[in-house]
Length: 169
Ligand code: IMP
Ligand code: MG
Image (cartoon, rainbow, N blue to C red):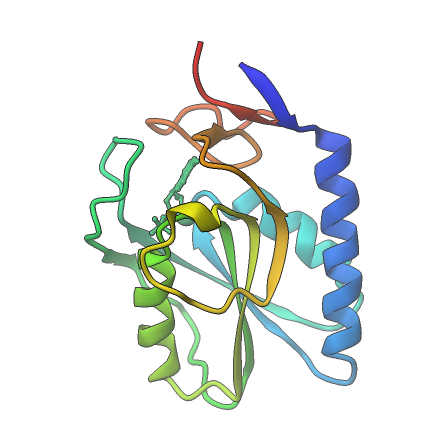
């Protein structure tokens, strides 16, 4: 499998994103929401790169059975522990592909009264977008490859790879 983004490349970019977020949220206390499970590696590195007091929460949605293509169907599998009223919320996603998952999530979260609601995604595949959604912080824009590693899976495997690689022979 071909390395698309090496561990060092990922780390350097995540640190940059953390600095940018710390600048943008100076004097505030962002509330990061990790979309399980793919965003876990990114979330832990990103949170440590944001030099501000912050809080974390986790939610899980399922849009993929075990295939590599979006079904368009999104299900809330695990809800947040904490409310969002008046908070500066940043949704942390591994990858925005069709945008269907994030579109659904943002609609759900917006109804909970956050003061601000932004998105940080490690990867974006704009060529596959079906719904246009604002992604405020993007780590890397990539072509239409199916990728695994650094949290991203194929059939629940490869999440532990240090690099992001293109899935395939
Ligand atoms: P969307 O709803 O099509 O934007 O899909 C978003 C979700 O699909 C992501 O959060 C991932 O869990 C999964 N996904 C999309 N593309 C890939 C990929 O290339 N590798 C692994 N998972 C992916
Ligand atoms: Mg995901």
